Image (cartoon, rainbow over all chains, first blue to last red; front, side):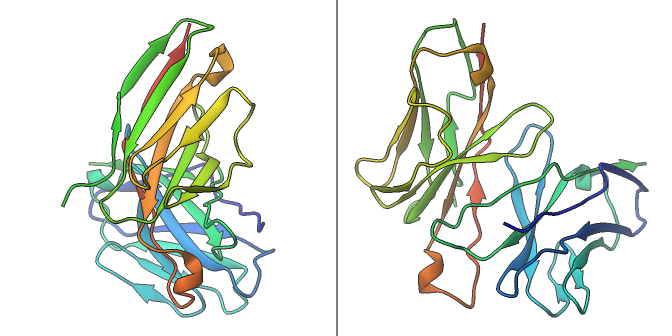
Length: 111
Length: 120
């Protein structure tokens, strides 16, 4: 399983962009890069995923390095509701599709 | 539509008691997962069902933990003779289809709110 390294915590101001980095230097060629987030007292929720190309959806953008050893989740305008723990997860399904979470990045958003 | 629901949301047990935690997945979802989340840590995989078949139970920490999904929908996680180290949030997740059937698409897991278990 690919190991990931994320900052333990980050801070942002409301309405400003946030760039959440993740290193996954041991990622395999078939691993997608998934991001989930966990709001306080809730279960994790899917944010975005990608393989090689940068990806955008209504929640965020995902920028993937050309060598795929790192990626950055971009929240274009942070809101208070974005305060959560963000997990970067290399994932290729495998036999059981289980997600392997690390400790993630705790994002604090200041008003 | 309705998401994944779990009950109870909170459970306090005395050491040695048995507990049962319920998960109602999203209707029609084939895959069901249980995860355990200790305080300050990310969720850790416990077990996986495809319909009623338990295909992976490699994450169950001991034989005191047992999970079932007899009709391929609702699942129950049972912990016998609870210990203090079992205190954690237990999360259930479901997904629509299995990876093998959609190699171009990685199936999203939808999580419930969790059951917080406290063993005194």
